[in-house]
Image 1 (cartoon, rainbow, N blue to C red):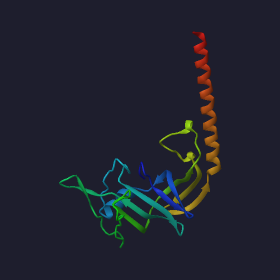
Image 2: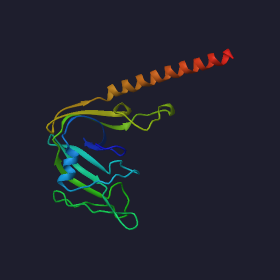
Image 3: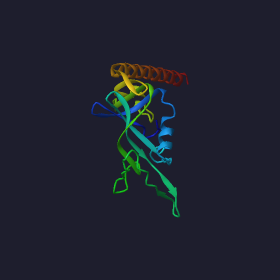
Image 4: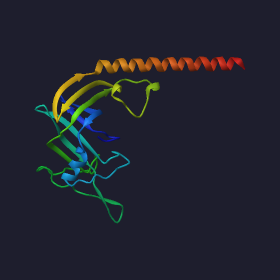
Length: 194
């Protein structure tokens, strides 16, 4: 799973962000790239790893539905884009205006993923006040959170964890407010001593 842009999960007609994984998929990502001769180029301006997967469940099986990959080669001026190979009969696409996050996009792969473990997917960040602003989000920061459990790529359980995440968010806000109140009290007490 990748960093800044992150992997996505198409679930029940909605797009979710993969916010947590725990389990064993082997070296799925490295094996995928090696098998299809893809060499992602790290892009510090977008996806830290130069790629992103979109997963889905089809007939109770975990699959890769889409992959976006940046591939570049050194050129006289700077770097030139590399057009990726055909994968499972699918040619890579690229936006005609040369925009977009990845210069090679493969859609409709339906490639099986032999993952065993849990995946948490989230959508719709919970409303935050200024005091809650942060760059890195955890699964409790999402309004809708679903936990998916897989065994060798087969979906064996799905749980809606949204209510539990709201309890965690509320508790974190309460604790933060208490810390702030303590800090303000100490600051006032210290100021009045002078």
